[in-house]
Length: 442
Image (tube, rainbow, N blue to C red; front, side, top):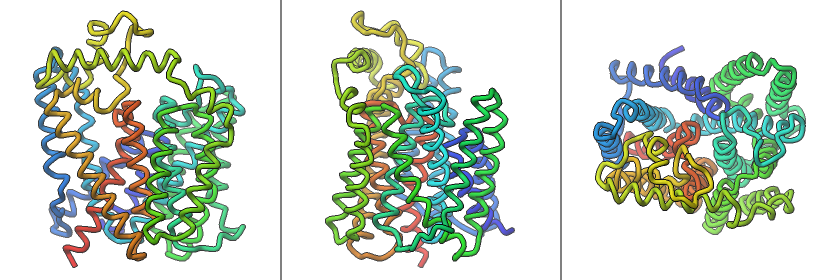
């Protein structure tokens, strides 16, 4: 296997494992970075300059400065190790230029997303994860992380159904999503019997191997398998999102559906309207459960208000370098307002507030620069694909909708602090720049 095929297989396996194992996805990212370095040293490839280079560099440098000026620099620098994940953006930029490769990697992400959503549904209806204190988290460590990834997967699946290539899904083609759900059922059964750890590890390894094989398989065989994924992933992910009872993810998913609807006005396929409407209906499968969560008078909402007040106090006291990465949890008791229901908080449940409190106002400016540049690039790519009717339109539409969902949900949750959500975002932000690099090379 040459390095070019190795990068595709590794990236597909990485995309599939993001929703199910942070350890596996980070290990695959390390291997992908090694392959990228080898290709660069062998002069087999080069990295195009992108508009995201400057904001990313500024954000990285300022984060390290903020860590150095923190009250506990060692702890802050330990938290800063997450900056390595930004290397995924450059892996994607280098690997995702061919349209077929892009679609296969995103299909792998749907594969892992289906596994996550399937386990969340089983946890809710079989393993007793049926209350606000015990919400389903799937393979991930927290229900907020699981709902954030599931939200993005739902929108990718709807975009594939609405704007992807027409494909007749025959019953014999559904073996791949059914195999994934069978594996998830095995994991759930093993977890109920107290053997969930071993079963999960075996399933993650099989999923990564399957995604790698799917990415490198012959075109016709792979396309028939990929075509069926969104038909199963969309309803299962929508169901999982509802039973997660996570309001920030519901708001983000609504924003993503609005983005898809806006693209449908730009000469996009009529099927995209059908996909948007279907997504809205699926999100309302249990309207009673949703209505009971649509309130700002509960303890969680009140706690967010007071923690944001504490965050403002943190910024006012240290506006330049902030408290330092990972330091909000340490200093929160000192800034906590007496009316706040909870004495401790790991973070401030808002991307903007968290970045400003951790890295100061300059860090917030660099973060907003990165977000705006990434989102506008995704918007231009989606508009171009919708208007021209050529190219991987569903990939562009799905990336735009998922990014809109994550950024809107991030107003109520520090979702970019979750490595799983951040890695998925970095993969999606690479798409328009990979195409720009391909056009420049041509």
